[in-house]
Amino acid sequence: MSGETAQAIVTTSDSSQAGRSIIGAAGLPLDEDLYNLDDVESSFFKQQTGIQDDAELKAHLLAVQKEAYAIHPYSCIRRFSWAKLKISRLFPYPELLKLGKERDGAIFLDIGCCFGNDARKAIADGYPAQNVVASDLHQAFWDLGHKLFKTTPETDPLTFIAGDVFDPSNLETIPAFTLASPPTTATPQLSTLRSLNPLRGHVSAIHASAFFHLFQEDDQRRLAFALASLLSPEPGSMIFGQHASRPEKGQGDVTKARTSMFNHSPESWAELWDGDVFEKGTVRVETQLVQLSGEEVLKTWKSPSHAVYVLNYSVTRL
Image 1 (cartoon, rainbow, N blue to C red):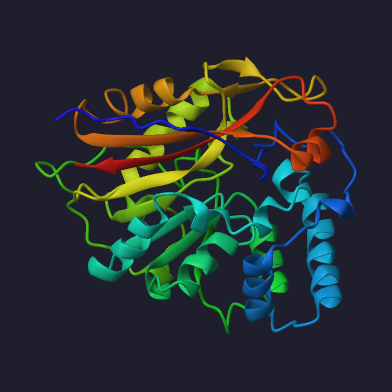
Image 2 (spheres, rainbow, N blue to C red):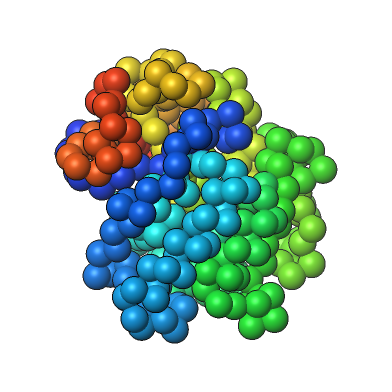
């Protein structure tokens, strides 16, 4: 059975995420006007932080944002994309929660997790916390996550791994496992993890948003192979998320001020996974190409040099 690519072009006023160290926010200052929580987001952060006053909550989130932006000026930090509960608005999200409910011990990895807001949202919606792993290059972001959610490693012992996904001591890429050639290692105890390597072949779901577009084309391919080596060969195991995209693949950026970034199209994204990373016909690739528009885009980029798109995607083992 061959992989399929489902595409949809829609328009929304929601903002996207952008940002690896080569793609920052071009020194743009923080803008308090970009703070805009809807009722669902406000309710989530109030429940998680215990802060019920709107003004106090805003001040708290702005303070954490300021510290994070000093660590690295990622655009997604500036635009409050981390506050948008984006994971729960991606079309594969119900399948993630279903995996957590129905597959015993299903490990969920949130890669490039920043503050850990997406992992915590999944847990709040019922994903077993003991099966969740979060990882980011910057330990400091995770520490700020504790500040954001008013937790400590003792009160919220969620497994976190600080490391570079391209560093073999953290994640050494090996061929993706298959049902005919499954992992021979035991599923690790998550609390003992010091790198991602012991997870190879044991992860049921990987969430990677605002991550792939940090890299150029060759490194995006390297990253895809690296994440594939973590994925369980069981049917239904999946990699999903969102990143910047275009209708036609190629180099470009929304402004002329930043380093040019590579964007996959829905077609090239499907070809990467179905036939390159994984053997042709062993995965199903689904995509939604979303054109962003409206006041939020103008606030973020002032005068965009072209239409702004993100790609929502899932890669599911058959």
